[in-house]
Image (cartoon, rainbow, N blue to C red; front, side, top):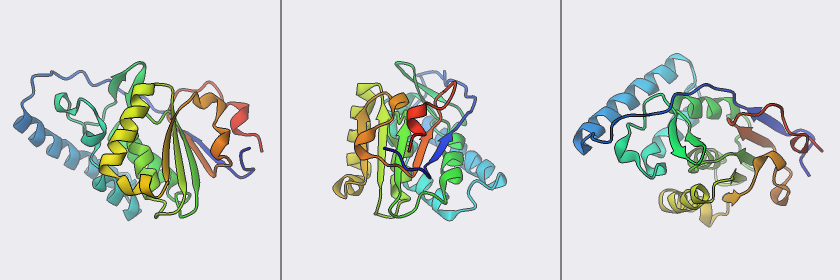
Length: 203
């Protein structure tokens, strides 16, 4: 069952799909990515989203490009959503940073976190890292290939999180929660929900 004091964050945002040309050369893409990254981090600082240094540190520690299977055709630090297929989207860097900012006081050692719609696992990895080596993040997604990719990417770029059993990815419908690792201190999603499912608020 879920804990009585669980923090549920439903992150409502509007995004734009990234429809850039696939003809961008590698060198041009790298320059574009660095420029976009610099601009988006400056924007985050202006909005005080990076006032907690842990948020900025973890966003710089993990490269968004490593969590996108086809990143060579995109500038992954543009402030846009990137469509992944199967109805799934990779959130913009600003949205992901804002999520970590909103949750920063709850992402502490020993916390238990459930992410609904974890996609390719980038945000789940960042949240797990912010737990300081002690805690648990469970990422749920309906799309099996995305879950498989999440596991592969995290094993490669954040192996310590798997070795310490801090992070898990599961194919499941987030609307029904995930009782196996309950209770949770934090439940996060930026998916579209008409209302918060009652199963997520039950003690």
